Image (cartoon, rainbow, N blue to C red; front, side, top):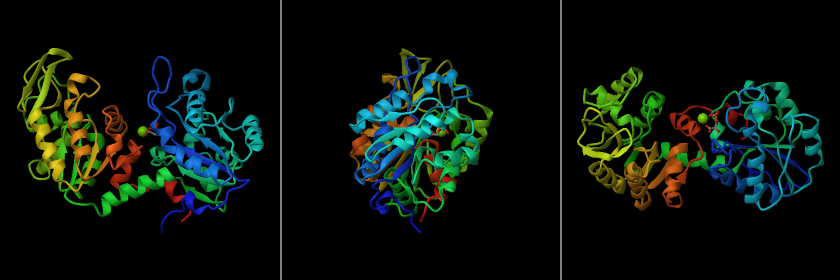
Length: 397
Ligand code: 3PG
Ligand code: MG
């Protein structure tokens, strides 16, 4: 049975809608400023829809991973997030300070009128949030008449009260998906169950071990899996090919060794690499596979970019997770930009997942040319792997 979405809620005049969003945005380490507001923008259609139906909205999210006392994690208060949310929404947004849930939050929620928006303080400022605590959940649940989950990036967290215990407590009241989560699920479900073929995956990033389950899930579905990024060298090490100065854990090599039987079949490795001495730009070389002593691999090479681009043009569907080089450095961004550009030009269904990959695509200005850029990092990987999310089980059918 498909899940209820906010499109099925009808008129909401006079209702208070509790919306779990994922406003866990990247922050500048020095200033605490938001460096990318994509996750806030992605939630706007849901918020606008609810306000348009006459609701008052109480939005809640975590931000970062605060450890203990909120006073020790002041940079993780929701102040700047709420301010940006208000700017993007084009209307004032109220924000509570003090306890996540306490007299102030209750009074603010009670006083909220149709068309008004309130943001609660960082949910993780209360340790009970990540313990799926029923009392904490009950206190939050009491603020709302309707529950909406529009936090795709956090849907894989099975132990977060705002994701699981709050909607569980609200059983009997309407509990629906927001437009963002509904779209993410629809796109990824379509991709995995009935993709336009050939189905191609491009995988980058550093750690094979983190992604073994994801890669194995993909190998069961895809026609080809093209490897790039630092994990290239983990595979090379597993094959006994020199990786120069790169430090690669044994655990990583073991994970790659497990996948070696598929190399040359479904899995393709780069035929060439850009390498450099640390980040000394004068030392850049293109090599075919083996990385010389003293060097590190920093990007896929031009032949690989060209080969992968040809595959992307021929594909029916392309799913991309993980930058294929050290794209934060312009000199090493060619591979990642090349993949993004090839996907942007391709007629295939193109889906990008993972925080860094999404940032890269945005940085190069190709995000509008993709079929879908997921707001999920860990959630995207887990959903593709086929994990069943406890958060989604709490939403009405
Ligand atoms: C994310 O960015 O992965 C989500 O917001 C969840 O955050 P977490 O990884 O700290 O649980
Ligand atoms: Mg995460």
